[in-house]
Image (cartoon, rainbow, N blue to C red; front, side, top):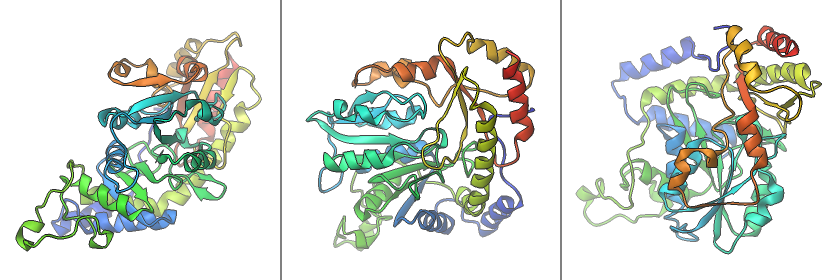
Length: 387
């Protein structure tokens, strides 16, 4: 395909890492996972990282952990402020744990939560806020963090689309009480399938480790002091302390992740170079809205919104893109309250979602990859200029 939505970034390093696991005979969670967790936390300057089998599972155990903290635990019926645009599994764990969602519109230029609406979204029942940086572009995480602190809210940062982005010199995925990442095939680094929860809070770290593996105590660090050992040493290894799942990763995924993490700075530099080419090509075309960078984007992809009233419809573009063998898709998951699954949620909409609706109805994106896309971007510019 001339320009795919996703691209393979594995090389000999990842294959050698997988062979190392195969030679070891240890395939499930073990030393490779532990090494990747330590390296990932160190890369971000954080204390704790917990690897799981997907970014979706990372969101699940992050939410679950906040229901079991000693202080300010979330409870069913509590309200949580969320942006109207994100992937479905940003929202599903919130629904599954009985939280009520308060949807806030996004800024059309950044595609991230419009923080000017946060005060309107706050009620006496609000206990948490979810920050999402869409497609590599940092949300106003500093503003959201300050709002959370001011109102004693838990902050969950879903950074599954924005690994290695930065705001004010600080990595995204480090602003929340608990932060999540995805290593799916198409993401900034890939472990095939995989995800990570990261936190500076030893209690949340220990709770995530318990929830990750059946709710048992065996993987919880003793120094966390969460679950003092019982008298029966034999039974201790199989003591179940909180409700949990099996969302453990495999050693193969972690070994590939270690190799990918070493490549991440180079990947990000190339993605940002491609972003500059894209910005130069399209920033002057008034028919299109392209994402305004906030901080330093890690540029997951190139979103484009066909400006309302410009005389061009989104459908006019899809045929020429298909003819040119260029892949495209909707922006993240679109406006989530527009999806059928919303009938299962307890939710409110704060004001209107006009910008999220516009992105849903008139937006799309094409892929960005960690190699030179100058020919692809030039071709896209040629196609759209002809319309």
